[in-house]
Amino acid sequence: MIKKITLLISVLLFIGICSFFSYSRETTPETLASGSLSGEVRQAQKLSKNLSQTLDFSRVQLCFKGELLACDEENRTWYLPVDMDSDSWESGSFTSLDDGISILPLQDYTLYEKSEIVASGQSIPFLAFSETEESCIVIQVVFTGLSVVRIETDADLDVDTVFAGSIVFYESCGQMDWTYSSVFEAHERGQTSRAYPKKGYRVNLVSVTSGGISNKNKLSVLGMCSSDSWIFYAIYSDGTKVRDKFNIELWNRFGAEDTSYDAHFGTHMEYVELVVNGEYRGLYGVMEPVDSTQLQISDQEYLYKRTFSRALSTELLDSYTTEEYLTVLGTELKGSDDAGTDYDWQCFRFYVELEEETDDEAFVSGAEALLDLDNMTDIWLFVQMIYGEDNIYKNMFYVFKKESDGYRMYQVPWDLDLTWGNVYTDDAEQLYVMSAPELAEEKLAWPFADRLIALDAGAIRDKISAKREELRKPVLSDESMETLLEGCIHEVQDSGAFARDAARWPDSAHDGDYDALREFMEARLTFLDEELVW
Image (tube, rainbow, N blue to C red; front, side, top):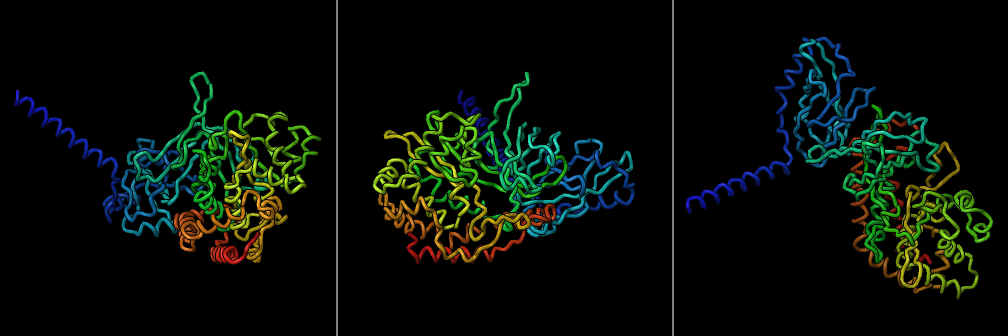
C-alpha cells in the first residue's frame, strides 16, 4: 500500500514538473541566436541560382507560425509585427499555405541589430520555391514594430462607404495568442476627414450563425477593452502623428477615471498598420468608441455628441424636428437607431437652457445642480492646457447620468488633433490645419466655462487651483510629459510606420516637427503656471 502511495505521489510530481516546464516553455517566447539562419541562407542562395524565377506569385501565401500574414501585393511584401523593444529576434517557421511551396531567407537577419532593421523599414528578401517545379520567386518581409490589421472585402474602399468582410488583428508574433479574427460590417466615418483620400472607418465585429443571422462579436483588441465596435482613425492631417495618442493618454491620466462611476469616461488608442485586399493602407489609430457601453449608459440615461460647430438655443430646439438637429445644432443623440423623440432630448435641453440663462444667480444654481463640477474642472484644465479650441463647440460628448437628485452632466473630449499649436484653417491645400505658436501664451476663451469661473459656481476656482497643484507635480511635470511624448514618438518613428505611411500617402502631413510641439508645450505649461487664466 505504501509503495502504491509512493508511486502515485511520484507520478503526480512528475506530471507537475512536466506541466511546469511545459507552461514555462509556452509563456516564454523562443528567440533566435545571432547567425542561426546562416545554413538556411546558404541553401536559399544556392537554390536561387539553380531554379528559374518563374514561380507564380499569386500562389505564395506567406505564413509565420502557421498564421497567414498581411501582404502588399504590388511590392510583394509581407508584414510581420515584432517586439521592437526586445533585442532578440522571435523564432518561428515561415511557410506557405501551398504545401508545394517552401520558404527560406536569403539574408540572415539575425546578424543585424533588430531595432535598426525595424526602424529603417529595411525589407528582408526570402525565397519562395518549388523544387519539383524547378521554379522560385523572391519576396520581401518587413518586420514592423506595430500591430498589423488585415482586411479582406469585396468592396472598393475608394468608392464604397459601407462594406463588410473579414478582419485579422496581428500583435507581436512572439506572443502566444498573437492573432485573432472576425467577420465585420463597417462604414466610413469622419467629418472634415471625409475629404481626404485616406479614409477613417467604424468597424463592427460580428459573428454569423449557420442561418445567416449576425450577432455582435466582442473582442479585446490590442489590449484594450472588450468591444464589438472599433474606430479606425486615419491620422492624415497631423504631421507628427502623435497628437491624438498623446492627448488621449494625457486625459486618461487624470480625467477619464475621475468620476464616481466604474466606467471609463474617455477612450484608448493603439497604433496599427492596415492592409486591405492586398494593398498597404498605412498608419492608423484603432480606438475604443465613446459609446453607451463604454460609459455604462442605462436606458434612462443619455449620451449626445457635438459634431459640428453650431449655435445652440431653445428656439432652434423648438423650431426643428429631432431629425434636423444634427444639421441645425451640430449635435446628435448617440446609442439610438434614430434621432430620438423630444423627450430623449430633454437632458440636452437642460444644458442649452443653462447656457442661455441671463440671471447670474439662476445660472450658478443651475450649474451646481446640472454639472459635475469635478469633471468640469478636469475638462477645463485639459482643454486650456492643450489649447483645444476645436473641442469647445464640437468634438465633445455630453454624458447625462441619472443620480438621486436628478441628472448630472459630464463631458468627454474627442478628436484631439487640433491641439498644441495646431488650429483650424479653411484651406483644403493645408489640410485645414495651420500652426499658431503664438497661442501658447494666450488664454483660450470658452464663454460658458469662463462665466462659471467668473461667478465661482460651486467654488470652482478653488477646485481648479487645487487640481492644478495636484497634477503639476506627478502627472503634468516636465519629465512626465516628455516621457509620455517620447513614448508616442517612439511608436510611430522607431516602428518604421511613419516613413511607410509617408511613402503611401505623400500628400498627407508628415513634417515630424516634434521640436515645435515641445516648444509649444513648454511655453503653454509655463504660461498656465504663471498666469491666473480666469
